[in-house]
Image 1 (cartoon, rainbow, N blue to C red):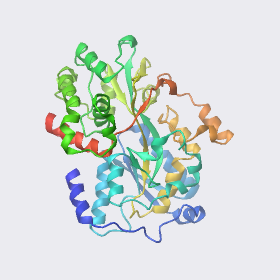
Image 2: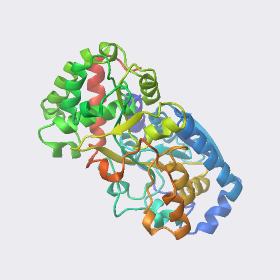
Image 3: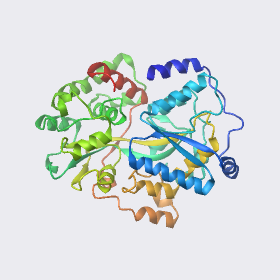
Length: 406
């Protein structure tokens, strides 16, 4: 897929300027008028029933309020949506594209920005609900894996890597507090840990977490990967994995397909420690009967990766006005409070709750974040995501060393 993207990008040629008739979110009444009757094809990961249900709810709300329909195009890999836009640009389809809004971050955003595949800069900052976004305390809203967002994408939720265990089976006193301790724990508890096979996002995130802890010069991860020192820089990571794989679930001969599969292995008692990129994920799974109520969260005192996830509008979207309306609704206090409810999703808000109007602030304050959700002061430091090029290169090297991608 990545080779296809690269080839099509070369064919696509020079960047196109922003179209003169693009809707301007600064003229919001005109945007709402243009959006009425449009259908937004929202390309978003479809691997979670509760997230799918949330997107369905959001679609029903903007249909009711603004007459905009939403079709959730369920993806197993965001790169597939990026590939559609790349192919359309290569074919000269600069209007009436098939992708209106994409749930995106990291390497996929960097790729679309680099190839000028996104609606012109600054649109996100003009959305009416942008005034509620917490750019002061959440710096990853303005940089996506070190790449400046420049208003090319609108924030949707916050993420931080956290680990889970079943306290009925695993004593909290024995839990690992770093990547090195996790390796020692896995050796002492063979078969009780695993991670999804890259290029699954959660699996690749585990590689980045270990590399961030093990690399000699962490600042190198904030720059584009350099092939010359790559082997030396990543040697501690792959030495680590060479020791870890033989003591993993199924001795590293098979991997969970994704996070839901890994969660099921914890529920079934096959794994004792798993992880996700949502601090409320365990509470959400408990609320939905997917994990027992004895599951608890923990994190590493030295820090774990943190980032923001976004929505973006392709430059050739057919329903740009409708996409703006949906993006704006997704950062409304109503939508963000519902999303943070662990019984719905549990995804942390991008808003500055303290700055909201009293009624909206009360909705957040009334949320029960769940028995397994760590308080903000318990989450530990936030580690910077590496530059997106590191994920691409790590996935390629992982596959070369340990097998082919699913």
